[in-house]
Length: 570
Image (cartoon, rainbow, N blue to C red):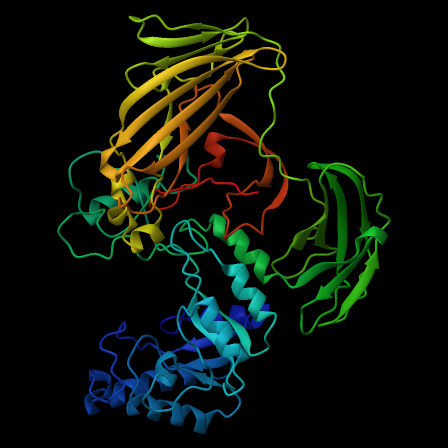
């Protein structure tokens, strides 16, 4: 834990002593990246600041000196380096020879005043380059990384693969712990003062059954005061101390028990104890053999004789099915309660693929139903009907406007199935300015240039193919949609986009797919894949593959600033 960017409540250090947390104690010193030069010309290099920089570091060290949890001193944060910081470093090293001192700017030129190489937001590639360089002898511990603002936290697995590969790379400090939103009640009236909001919040505290609380940030109180908008809502957990989705990935990557396959045909796996000081005697390993998401065999290992930093092979009596997709789920749970950890709580887990299914990109429709096409000149729609289903396309837009199977509508009232090139932007998207750079794709104009239908004969029945073509001048593209409509109600949709001209250019897309409006009573989905928590291509290892079923409301996550959420991978 890094106490950024100033000393914390004294009780905090007592708790860290009690529960065994390592602490980097940081002095109250920051100019927030104001004027880096490394040439002794910046304000923090001037004599007027010498006493202030030294005294703040002295106070920090003298207050926390006797706490065993404190293992590193930090001179400050995002302030240029100078001889003033070198003086603080020398004072600390003279007083305390047992603890290293870190300073993020200490190795970027100027005086030499850091025992740890502690950059901010080093890329995975830069971390590996440093770790492989034999001339770099200092430990690498990023003083900030994994900026968890909104829907974020990607690539953590790549960082920790390197941490576990190179002893020199020893981790980093997530930025940061908690979303710093303020608890307020909804305001549907005119502008209120801060005092008004305080009075409302005092009346309706969280958990009292009152109005649904909101968490606010800069700009929510008026449009005139300077603010940093929602920039401090960048925590692993929310203001209400509930876990944000990326917290699960952090917990998974930081767990201290790991499992790898050794000889899966014989059921042998390797259990590695990453702890430095404790064995695994207080944990039991529970395992389950999963076929297509359902448990077909399970068991437990109650005695784990694995010493700190050691690995032990364990052979399980697995009866591995010869068909289907087969996974081995492993959970490590406490036998008895520990400080902050309840009896039976899972402290580490893993999923190992024993037999992965081959992906199927297309399944041939085998229905025997026959379809009829109605497409008279003055009809507003092209209608395809069978004994089981009715499908219609609007001739003006080329889009699906009716879709019923077995007498039940698959579309919400006034709904359709339409191309989609956008999604709600995330905080990281906005940080990169994508909401402006890619805005051409938000709602690009689509002009229907042609629509046609033809009946095709299948092996056991008939089907209809509808093709709609569009010009998209806003993005200099042409779009083609092809629908194969079968008598059982199945619709195969193919979407293709090409340049309008050979030299046409357009910004990248946030999405390339389709959106369908469903009836309100179709609010539950079931899937086989990773879950149940949302997960993405670069943030998914914490979620195991299985069968999950959730409502739409359950799959929505209320980030402090509303944004993209709910995606599932694999």
